Image 1 (cartoon, rainbow, N blue to C red):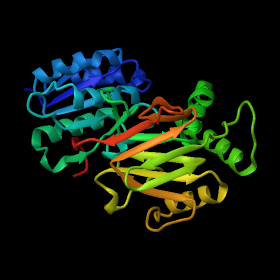
Image 2: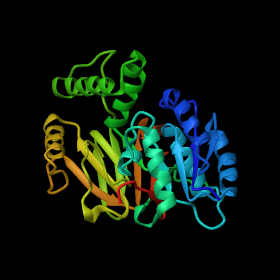
Image 3: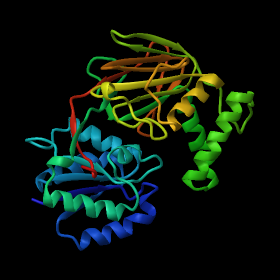
Image 4: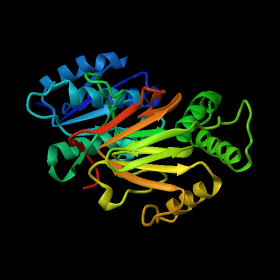
Length: 322
C-alpha cells in the first residue's frame, strides 16, 4: 500500500514544463506510485493497476479532458472493490477550477508535497464530499460523462472563441483570458461583430425538473457542483448538495450587475433582474446546435436531442485547507 497514486498525462499543456520535475520528485519519493498515460483511452487500464497498490489518495495530473475521463472511470469503472480513495487534482490545464475549489494552486510540486504529508499524517479532516454532474443524451442505457463544471450558451461560445482564436496566438493564459473578456464586452455592449469577434449566442431552453423552465439568450450559463462559480464567487450555504445553475441574460445591464455583485462579494445574497440562480438534481438543456462544455470537453444539444444533466451520489475529494 502506498500513500499517493499519481496519474499523469504527459501530453497535457501544463505538463510540458512541469512533468520532468514531477517525475524526479516521484522517483525520489517511495510514498508515491506514478502512472503515466498518453491518451484518455488508457485511463481505465491505469486505474485498474492503481487499485492494486491500494493508495490512500489518488491525484490527477493532467488537463481538463484527463480529469473528466478519470472521474468518469473512477465513478463507473468499479476498479476499487471497497470504495474510491479521496481524489485530488493538481493545478494544470487552462482553467484549474476543480483544483482551485479544493484549495490546490501554485507550484504542482509543493501541492504534491502537501498531499503526501496529509496522506501520511491523517486524511479525515481534509476529505470533502462533492457530487458530480452526469451528462447524457437522455436515452436509456447511454453511458454518462462525468464532470463538475459545465458552461453553456454564450459562455461556451466564448470559451470556444478563446480556444480557437486567442490561444493559437501563443500568449499566456492570463493575457488570453483578458483579451477574450475585452472582445466579449465589446460585442455585448457595442454590438461589434466580425471574423475575429465572438459569435452571437443561440437561443436555449433550460428545464429544471419540478422547478420550472428558463428560455432565451444567455451571456453566461453555468451548472456546477463546485462551491466556486466565477471570479471567486461562492454559492450560498443553502445551495450546496445538488447541481447549482447560474444564467445571466444576454444584455449589458444584467452582465454588469452580475460582475459588480461578484467583485463586491454580494453575489447570490439577493435576487437581481436578469440573473437566475437555481438548483436541481435533473436539468435539461435544449436548443438548435447549442454548445456546452463539461470540464473542457465539448457537447452539443440539437432539436429533439437535449442534453440531460443529473447529479451523482457524493464522491470523496481531498481539500488541502482543513
